[in-house]
Image (cartoon, rainbow, N blue to C red; front, side, top):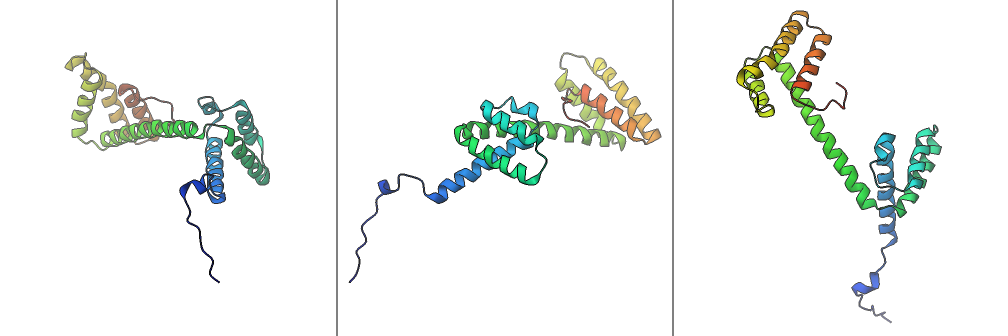
Length: 184
């Protein structure tokens, strides 16, 4: 005797499957794990509950692998009550800000290397950047801003040491108004 299968409609599957619940739980735990990788000072910028904040602080103090694993599971459980979409958005904004900052520092390093290699085109590029940053200054004033850069470049070329290169980097960073939140 053959069994007849009843047609299945969409309203029969209103609740998520067990697999979907497990995926959601793993995603919440990964989000919590990402929060643990941030410095504690950044947690204040996130919209998280005091309980989750305390659990993250506890995670920082745990030394053992198993203890960290269990605390991470607890953080994942606390994430059920959090607005995970908002936290994920805030994490993405933080990453985007860091990417822009990192790109600016890479550009600054490129300029420094071009100066140290005596590339003549870099001075025109620097003058153009200065005119973009300081449109109110005249050409002579912008040229005066480049005097310390030229001196440091000459000193770095003569000595070929890291200290001169770092000093050149610091002067360029302040001249081009790049935030110095990250280290060199």
